[in-house]
Image (tube, rainbow, N blue to C red; front, side):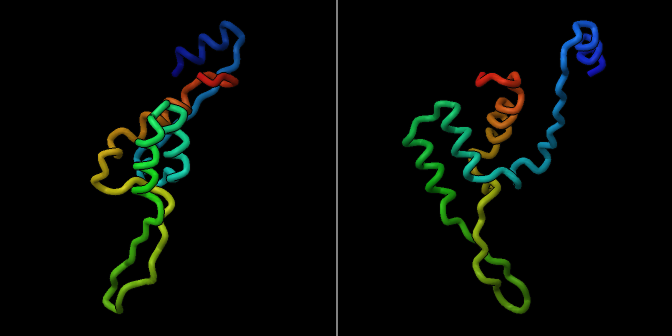
Length: 104
């Protein structure tokens, strides 16, 4: 980090720093964002639809000693055991690390 900072000062260029905590990445990414990133990455439409269909309308209930809660609609997070899970942080970090003002 210090090297990048020194180089930016030397060249009198702005430096942007982003710290991303991937510890909760799987819990917090929206399903809409997953679809957008897959589209930007050029994933075939049939595959994007398959993935979106797996997440659309997802619900869960919490079982307590007093009974089950009403259905809770899930709009963020990657399902546990989902084969997409290990690949999830890479597309988001790639989007975060592109040069400001570019689409690359």
